[in-house]
Image 1 (cartoon, helix red, strand yellow):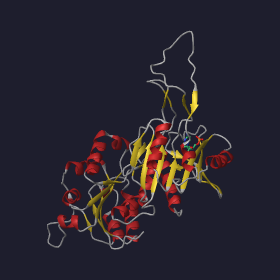
Image 2: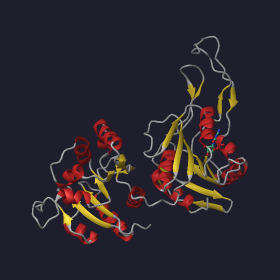
Image 3: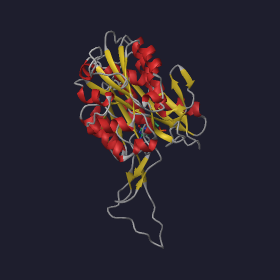
Image 4: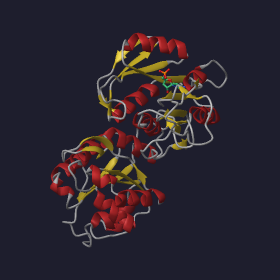
Length: 398
Ligand code: C5P
């Protein structure tokens, strides 16, 4: 990645993830960026001013320095001397101050005074992240054009589990590169991703569904977007937010998912991560089916269209790379290889979903099956798996 001559002002706020800011400085410097840092008082509880200054090789700004002093750069100048202002980690506190327009220390004053694009990578406890106040602040900031690099999900330093861990420094670097106009390896490419379950109605109140959370498909959409792809995510009903920067189309049924996918073509890349219901009710009862002590109702099913197979069928609109998933509980590799052939897709990510809590969980373990053979990937976070898959896709000539 070449960011030669670009200037980034990095604001390091408080939180255990502040140590990752050191790695980010290293990556930015290696890419040719000049990195000037502001360390907040809370941030200085987690990393030392000396290590930040040593890594950036530039003067460090903290509240300890008097910015009214002629020998110092004023906060207005500081806020405008950079091409991009990055807040990483961005604590719940600094996000709230940014949303409210507070300016009670150097970092928040710079953020209020800047006329440059701002990018924030939040990191905090899962409950703080999920709190309605934080989510409202994020929506306000995103609405004002602040770029947000969403946190990862996983075990946290506080002992809890969930979204809130700072995104990995290479992911933040990618987002910075894109904000600075450096194109990612997938820029100019369109990717369609399906995600989540489908709900197939039986009557006005009941449906056939499954346990898919959409976490893996949504993470893949975000990871492809992080590498510069334009992404259309077609999602069944899920309880997770739309990924930032991705066009998300919400559908209920397999038929609606197929129609949305076909409407989104053409695309160079398609990843089918949705757990599409194989069947739907042959007919939809117009009224709620009543309980009847004398007779059990029977449900006649009919097969749903296979979206992956349709996408992978030869034709002018076939994406250059079509990737499917195979959730198996036995004979993983054989079944997945057979599925690759049957569906006509290029890659299959086979995962063993037999009783491991993978469906709906935060982690996933897959074997990548291609025409060249099988490659078992280690158990990892769904977001890490998505990043690895996106990087592998970016290696292809598409
Ligand atoms: O046939 P099976 O459901 O095991 O195949 C799984 C793969 O096919 C997944 O990639 C899934 O997204 C896709 N699929 C689909 N449409 C269907 C069924 C599965 O796109 N109706």
